[in-house]
Length: 445
Image 1 (tube, rainbow, N blue to C red):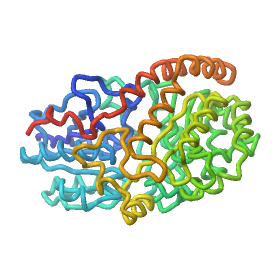
Image 2: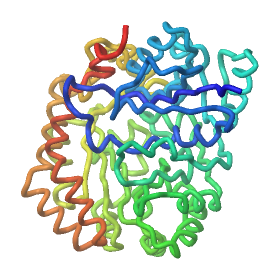
Image 3: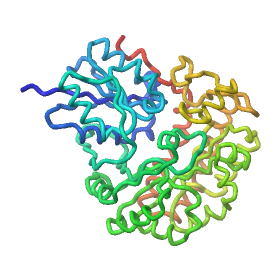
Image 4: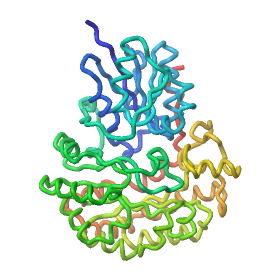
């Protein structure tokens, strides 16, 4: 009996004609591996990663599933259209679809909102029976699905395995689409399932995919204890508040943590208040950084520019702060109003959005603003964020940060540091003005 073929597609953000995709954007797509694991063996599966290969629209398939992020929505919809014009039904899923289902519904035969584990098998059953519904709403929690990475066999990704440890976050930052989707709730994952995924990983280095690994402190401590005997190396995401507990940091390091991404967001108290992150203003940031570094953990610091409390002096002070503390790496991002967030609604109501749906705008490029800041022109804030990244990635600055990293992290992380940071300056320029959905002329009409 002939098997039904499913084609999975991960769209690129966009591509500049004739140029390779951004190196640090080539992480393995965990969502695709989970979907593969949930797919019964009676289906054949094909996977095209639009970031690193051309999609073969002529390859026979019965149904196409595309995972959509806000930055990839324009390209995803174009790909979906190319298949639907050929009579192939398309399913769209991902957080953008969950937050903006009405938009996605117009461009697909079916949409899957929320987490796929609870609904993907049912969707496939309906399709096999010729009764595909237009919408499937997944639940936000976890199911015991082990990622199946067999679809990645011939593809070249960064040598890092993504491991899910939790979903959601307890905070209510006004710019965060994830907190809005999960309604400020954190869903922890069973530690046994996490350990299973680590054991199946083909790599020595892991990124624990969790928007706030420290949201449930007891769960995090139990996870650290379980990971410690495995002698792996990992990075994750947390908050600066972890620095207040030396025992927590020690357990974190012992479990293999080498790098933690922390959203400092802003050094301005007014900006922190506006983003509903006022609790950060009371933290001794410099002392907290020192404690984390002294524990042997590097910091990937992220900052957001463009709130009403931010001025040109804010950006200068932020870059100086990042250089002073010799962060492993740092991101200086302009504020971006994601659909479904309170920030988006506020900017829209006040008439400050440049495009209602900036992610679909014909002339919108990566690195550009989608709103009017209070103390900058949109072009000025974009330029200043670009300049901040270039200043932080300048050769002498990278050297000082590298020597600091070699004193605070393991030898495995030294090589990773140089691999990441020696190309950082080049990638800063490569990322600017990538057309969202771009190089669409390469897609079939």
